[in-house]
Length: 252
Ligand code: ZN
Ligand code: FE
Image 1: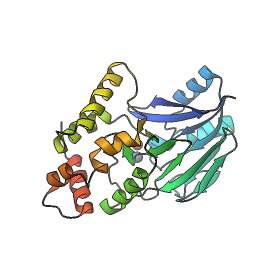
Image 2: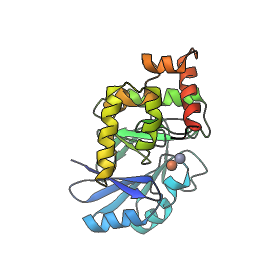
Image 3: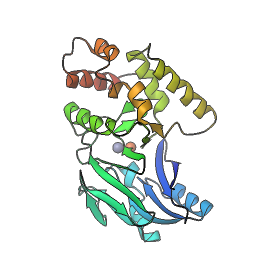
Image 4: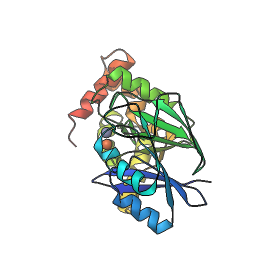
C-alpha cells in the first residue's frame, strides 16, 4: 500500500510524494528541494526516484540537487531542456520501479508543452500541467487538437483514479467553469468541497477522474451546456479551442 501526499512548493505548485510502508519514496516534479527534504526528514523516508512530467523549471528545478544528495533515479521525458536524467521515457513506456514498488505507464500528453508526459498507475495519475482540477494547462507549445487528444487519453482512465496535478488552481478555475456551466450540480458540489478544503488549509487535490469528468469544462466538450456555451463553434476541437481561449483572457 502506497501513501500519497501533496507537498506545497513555490507559490502554488504541488510536489507529489508516494511512499511505501518500508519508507521508500518517490517524488514527482520537485521544483523546490526544501519541502521534499522536510517531508523525508519528518517521516523518516528514503528518496529513491524522481519522476518529471515536463521541462518547466517549477517542475524540475530541484531534481538534480535531490538526485545527487539522495542517489535517486531521475525519470524524464525525451527533451534536451531537461538537462539530466537516468532514464528517458515516452508515450507507452512502462515505468516499473523496484523501490518503492510501483508500476506506471507514461502517457504522451502534448499541449502545455510538446514533450509533456503523464504517469498513470497505482490508482494515481501524475499529470503535471496538463489536467488541473476544473481546468487544464495553457497551450504554450501545442495546438488545441493536441491538448484535447491528450485530455481524452487521461479522461479514459478509471473513475477512481486520483488526479494529482501540478498546481493549486482549483478555485480560480472554478470561477471560469461557472461561466460555462452555471447550472451543473457536480460543479457546484466540487466548488463547495474545494472551498471547505482551502478554508481548512488543505490542498484541493487529488481530485478523482470521475469528479473531473462531471465538473471540469475542459473534459466536457461534448456536454450539451458546454456545446451551447461554445456555439456556433462546430467541432469538438473548435469548442475546446474556444474554451481555452476564453480562459486565457478570463478575469474573475
Ligand atoms: Zn508547466
Ligand atoms: Fe507548472
